[in-house]
Image 1: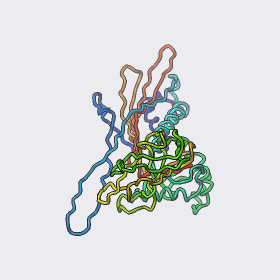
Image 2: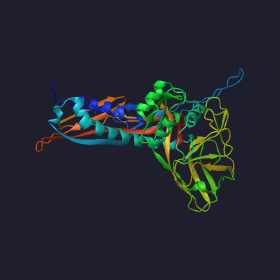
Image 3: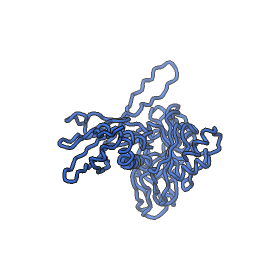
Image 4: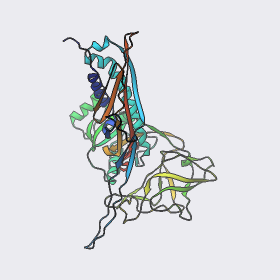
Length: 408
């Protein structure tokens, strides 16, 4: 069969296929495509507001007990334009699509996919729920099941759960679970592919990713840390900051992404409002450096609500003065942050980029709610064609209670 000149649409669709197949994390999270940029002049400020699910309480008896609906939201801002730039000749455009894809598109777009995944995985350090032992590569069914249990404690739907592991954790898990109540076809698949695969231990898919992030803890874990709110000024419903006493030096730190618990502050199930029996794990949202033996206004997430009459209740009690604070991990140590999550824990949003005029060709395609633009411009002096493939995207943690870090 003779080769034909590849069209802009053909090339761009092939780019979309390759991008989808090479994304690991972003392929398994919620994706939002904003088409308001499809027509010139349509602009919305570059953000999408995503509603959070409403939460309610129940009443007992015949009396009506009306409660207000307080609708929360998070804002996804599209601000990252990633592109990969290539150069090919007019002769190369007369190859078959398979040849062109293998030689030009596959290596370039797989790199783009890896970088998008790596960018989006920065969201993992916003998650407080954690299992595993920092400094120990997860290698048993228990840690995967504990992550599943942690998500279930927060009423996570049982379907569309995924688990992403770095290469070391993936190798340890496959080896550790290779004969663990698996059917022969699953064992065969693990042997051939080196990954756990589909529908194992409550997860729709396991995958290995080189884009798994690492987190470096602060130095505060070396010291005794206590809540320091004698007047209770910050110990109020909806609190998102708290002062802490620290026994260490003046320059001790608690870093963005550090996970900590407070004695006596237990998580509750968002539907039944019953204690899960585990302390709520909080995430520090900004670097804080101690001064005069104190961390002042440590910012954390999620906000704390303890009132049983409040649909937002997530703990059984607020912190009290002098309650012990435990920071997860060692001092200034770097740990891989493997991740178990439901699809709706995170959102990737893309939008259409402007289609330039006066170029050799341009095309834009949307595949699996990801908008991709291809632009190329012929250079007569060298008979070659510089070409770029662009994606405009943003990401946000939508429902952090639906995810769990697995520390390595």
